[in-house]
Structure formats: structure tokens, C-alpha cells
Length: 442
Image (cartoon, rainbow, N blue to C red; front, side, top):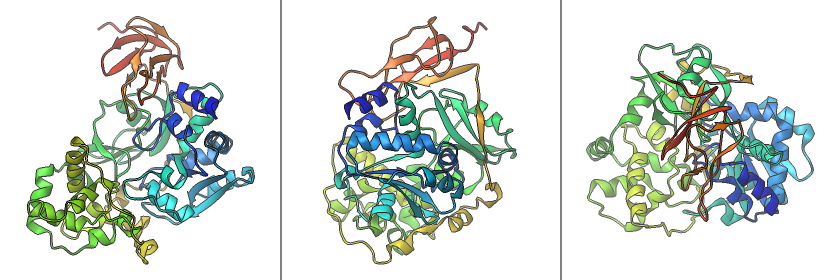
């Protein structure tokens, strides 16, 4: 219904677990199934599973509103079997149209294309969207934000896991714009001499620095030693990746045989793409263009390749080139691999392969209190689409939840709201800075 999408738009809700696609756009579509992706298959992250356990009513409310907006007759909450606290909290509250689908502890169960396949049997076509097969997907935190939006509460906070080489792994809720230095302090600081930081999970997360603020899409904060294999891999240049690929690729095909998109019928053959690139793009153009369907899950890079090549990084470079000239993949969906379900990776085996066991705590408990920073920096672009347009200026007094940047007319984007009460210290082309209690004078 239009009223639901309008309230969600007013609240600035975007996808909390990925690229930040504005949620009101999804709610304006029509679908028969609405899927809650609670798989949270990235090792070490524990946000969604704990939010589902602590706020089951809000999650079901958010899903119910989303189903009403899209006309979906079926609601599915996808959770791994080991998330017993969440399953137990949700089960007694389920209305007839909503069910829980139990997933095995595998990676990448949280890739929305894989989640849809595992829960419904449907396959998203290459280069397509879940909506093409009648499904809309959001994660747990996004739908909790939808429920809050219907109560008039905009998105001003983010819940994230802080883990790895820290004193006290923890899952915290902080105002948007909080510095990652403050977030790290909530976990008691680092426990290694030369730390490096990942925003998101170990597989798909990006190297970050502590000067960055928390945004609506911050996936988590993982601390690892700077010489850890994951950090070194993520720091490799594209030139280095291509040089290594040309030198040592033995065309064993493991990257293709274990590629989650390939095993469900997408063309995407990483070994052939690497071969084409190694020989000056000799080969069928469609093979190279199939890189556009890569989900960047990292299986080929971190798990399958025996000689340390990163087909994923090759795909990313190709995707950038193709998108710059507006090339889209046009391939068809083929048959799924008969062994597909057996080619997905057990999480425990992935943790071992990534050498994460020394920094893999059994828990990162959710803290109920909201941290209050003295200062926040709120980027105007925390989502896919155009940056928000400021509606405040330096010196203005604002209250938490107040609109400070609006959606540009006729564009894809999301509103931004003050996450703390204070005074606007600075408005730039990239962000709005708010300081609690007044402008700081050095």
C-alpha cells in the first residue's frame, strides 16, 4: 500500500545489510513472496540473529507491513538451524501467512539469490532481480526499521558486531555517524600490535580505517592482525591480481565448480574468464560479460583456488569496465548443477580455511543500551543513488530524529535524520557534522 511505502521513505529506511537500496522502492513493487534474509552467513557477524531473538514482535510487524505493501501472500523468515534463540522467540508469534525456513550452516546462504533458491526453489535469472521471480528480500534489521518507521521513528541508529582481535567481542547499537574509534572502544580495544580493520564480514567486507563513521550500511567491524591472509588479500592491487593469475592459473576449474551462482545455473565460469583475460580477452564476449553476474561472495578467492588467484577481483575489474560503457549481461538461466546443494561450503570449514579460529569468539552479546557519542558525522550518501540534500546549516540546533537532508526530487535516494541532539557544526558536500551540546572551539 502507498501509505506504508511513503512512511518508510520518510523514515529514510535502506537495506541495512548490503548496498543500501532504498526500501520504499521495494515496497512499491508487487510480489507474491516476501523473504527475510536472516542467514547472516558471513563468519563472525552476529547482528541479525540477535536482533531477531530480542525483537521478534518488531520483525514480524515489519514483515507484515512489507507483505501488505507488496501484496505478498507468503512471508518467509530464513534462519540457520543454529539460531535457536531467534527461532524460539519467533515461532509462537507467527501468523498463518508467515513461516520460518531452516537453513544449513553453509556459505553463502546469505547471498539473496542463494537464499531464495534454498527457501523457495526458485532461481533468479542471470543479471536479473528477485522481483523477476516474484520475490522481495530484506534482512532482519531492515524490516525492524520498517516496523519503527510505521510508528513514526526514522533510522537514526545502527546495530553491528565488533569482533576479532578485541578484548570483549560485542554487538552494539550506536547513533549513525559515530566514529569507528568509539565503536572499537566499546569492545575494549584491540589485542594485537598491528591491527587492520574490515567493515563487514571477512569474506565480502572492505578494508576500512577508524576515521570512518558508522552508516546505515555498516556491516560490522572486524579487527585482525595486519599480516593476516585476509587483510593481505584485500589489499592486493588489481595489477598484482592479474599478474598472479597470468603466471600461475592452472585451469583446475575449482573456482567454477564451487561458484554459488554457477552451480544454480548462471553461466559465470571464473576459470574461463581468467583464461580470457590472461590471453588478451580472446574468447566469447559473453563469457567475459558474465562477470557482471558475480555476487563477489569471495568463494573463488578465499576458498576454492589452490594457487592464490582471485577470480573475484578479475570479475570486479571487468564489471567496472562494462558498466562504464553501459554493457549488460544477456545470458540465459541454464540447468542447476545436480550436486549444487553439496557444493556450498560448511561455515566451520570456511573459518578454518581463512585461519579465523584464533579470533573467532563463541559470542558477541547484544548490548541493550544505546551509546551516546559527543559528535557524529552523517554522510549524505548512505545508500545507492543520489546524495541527500541538506536542509540545515551550520549553527542550527537539531534534535535526534529531525530531518537534516532530504531526498532529491525524482531521484533514487534516501533521507538523512539527526542521530543525536545538538548543534550542526558543519555542512559540506559530503556530510553533516553534529556536536552534542554546541559547537566545539579549539
